[in-house]
Image (tube, rainbow, N blue to C red; front, side):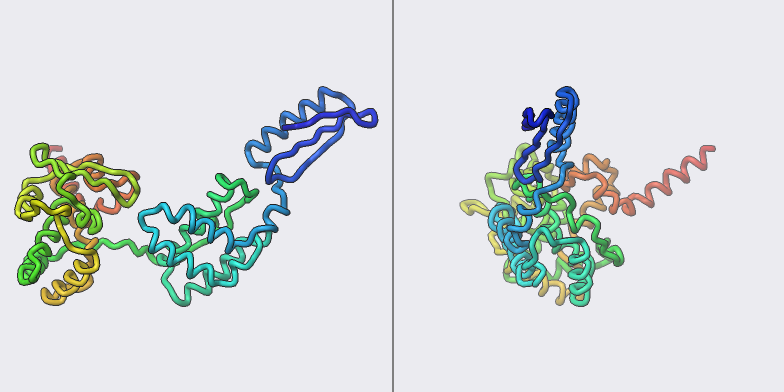
Length: 333
């Protein structure tokens, strides 16, 4: 709040806010003092006033990272992976700097150093939590951080988004190789991923209570973006679930993520298929949904994408359909 007091024949205004530099100004007229006080209070609410340098001098980047790791990261589904990334970052000398010293130039130096070891896409992903922690520190923890030093950091490099789809004959080879596995669930999980576009972790977490056979629906309670979703089940997906013989078991596909990962690698080697990630099956499934004529909102309901722009990468799946439609229009004209 602004405080106005009469002093030495003038009206002195003082603006005091936690985390912001204290400012004051004197006026001859009370009206002018009140007008300036109201304006500066609005500026303070918008965080447009200079921050208190002492607040940033008392905290190092490392202390901020540790607090973020123990409070924000600890609540995330991907806690273990992000914790490892943040612990590795904490070992770098940049974390010894005071927040009052940190500038984009320091992260430019850090970026150039790390790019000798990792790809731009990897580094950008690893710095995601660091970028977010500056926003959290400003918006939730009350630290007077005016500019996020990572916001303008550039990561030059080729677009590394994967658009790998199954080639002719690959699926048959993979299923034949999976059928020879001692665990009969391997082939079913692969086919289920193609039928539902679900992620590996989502599939392995399915429980009987999540499945509504009569309603042909499946609840996914925990997803990558943190929001549950319910997806419709095709006849193929229903058949795969019915054939699991999972009565009396908590999980429909009782296999650990690591065990399945190792089995997937063995299947690929036996099938002679290279450069294929299990997540590529999700891409294949989403692309096939478009090819079958589903609309973007319908596909988003199944895939769980919140940002429709993320589905634009699958636009190539409908190119042949677009060409066909254009040809039909040309024939009519």
